[in-house]
Amino acid sequence: MSIAYVDFNPISTASTQPALLIAQICLGLLNRHTPTSPTGVTKYFADLKVSYSTYGDEWISRVAPHGYKNITIDEFTSECFSSDVVSGYIKYDYEKQKALVPNLVTLAGVRNSLLIEDDEEAAANGLELIFDATLDWKDFDAYDATNYMYEHYINDVTGIAKSNPGIDEKSTEIPKPLNSYMNAGLVDFIVKERLFNFFLQEGCIPGTRDHRLTKKIAAWEGFETPTAVWGYDNTYSITTGAKFEAETDCVGTLGQVASTGFPNLSFYSQSPAIEAGDLVSSPFQDVKYDPTKTYVSFLIGDGDNLRFLVERHLEWFETRKEFCFSDANWTQYNITSENACFPLVWSMSPQLLKFAPQFIKSWYDDVATTGNDWFVLPPSGDLYSYPGAFSDSDQDVYKKRMQSHAELMDIGGTVHWEFPLFSTWGTALSYFERFAEDEDPGITGFHCVNVPYFEPILEIFGAHDKKILNDRVVLFKSEEWRGGGHQSPAGIAQRLNGYDAGSVKSIYITRDGGFNFTDLYEMVGMLDMGRVVIVNQEQLVSLALAADRV
View (spheres, rainbow, N blue to C red):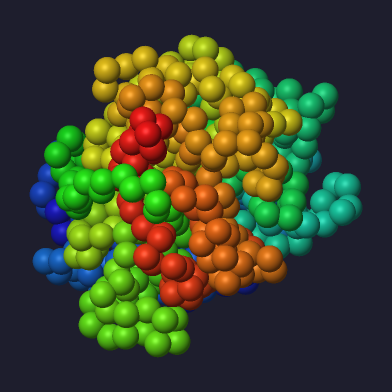
């Protein structure tokens, strides 16, 4: 296959949203290739600004090391319009039907059609009218369109996605105003995979018609549970995110793949999925437990959010390499070249194993360069979810997925979240014990964080900071470092230096309180390195087991 690199940025503004939707739908339709497709087929990769960084230039060199051809957006759409994978067009009115765009994207995917407002533009490109939403959906709201798609096309979809069409999630008005536009970064993947895409403002509010319809969609027999929801549900914003972002507290069989704004999944998902042995973690030495020391692992969080992996985490890792390879003494952080590359653990979504194998392989190649970076699964493993709320049968399925991910990623740890209002740490404990029952549990370290993060996890840990299930599986009560206020580098260092001798701890780090990657180095420079020992996740588990035997 050849690779074509298309610059989408000229049409990535609010005023050009209809043109970007056409381009992204084209990307999804044209990228419906498989690893066995003919070698003459072209794969398309888009340069699309998704947040504050330029995504395409960095990654096209990674995914196409043997070269690619540059084509303009006009050349790309021309190839799309004349392609036999496009059956025709769906007529709609973008401004009047903006709330229905998520549903229209699914309709485009299942009908292999483009969203075009102008009949003359469609006719000029030889496209046949497949569906007229300006007539058939003339008086529809988001509920009507979602219900229509369920009644007519649920048998044609392969999964679920949620895409905010531009609703202001921070507004206190009811209903919230639709005053922006949909992030189209995931549209190509939704179209390629024929996902059931929708967005209902009250889709997670019990007792509403929106919620009843959401439950009906989730209960469709064609979806394996627990079911992934791609995109992001930000219908109700809270201080550190969105109330229903994990999806499990919306419907108890769901979990999220945070992926809004992540482009080119239609490209990545054409590659063969990762198999056992494809990914290899860096080797490490055993650390002998010393009861006079304090042991800690630092876990970089938010790896469940695919967009962070292509933006912020990539930038952070570039900074990490500067520390590891410069042979400099960083006096501003009290860091020397000898301790600048301390062990560090990054969370990484296992969804990449199937849907972006080139992407995750590139990350493994990167961390192998330092020899001192490793991975764990993000909260709560397979999906951003609250497994304590799953049924017994769904917990069994989820456990098997987790063990498969651990084998494929050559890792043994995961971050685990629960939301006590909707699930309990007591039922989560029974889920953890399922792993402990196995001779090879796959996951040996669970790093537990409450939602809200500052609440204690009394049901499992009481006043302790870890729980040993057996000689293979350890639960850690992770402390969360979000940055800002009392969580300054100096404050965290003071806390770590003050832990009781013999402590074995994990620190889960996220950026949503203002944390910056260099804060980690500033904090490490304040540690009593004669007493505090930084280790990776696997070493931490072994040390916790050793501490329990003392």
